[in-house]
Length: 91
Image (cartoon, rainbow, N blue to C red; front, top):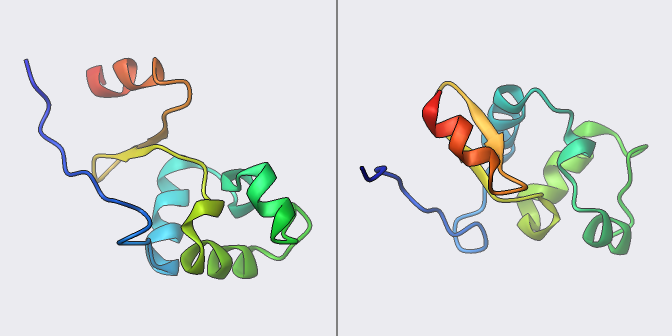
């Protein structure tokens, strides 16, 4: 059985600050928890950076965001490792 989905190329169609806030709400994470360590360190952004500034930086440079993220409108998952997707899709 196939799963219907829409792939969003994050570099071509980055998430807005509002979309990031909504996604973080679904994930139950704070902005610093969604940062990619190497990329955020290179950009001078860390866990001590104010959340709003982190969101603005992620909206401008989506390579700062951990991925892949899958959402279904009411739930979201940061699917690393990919095995997490199975339980997400089943639930």
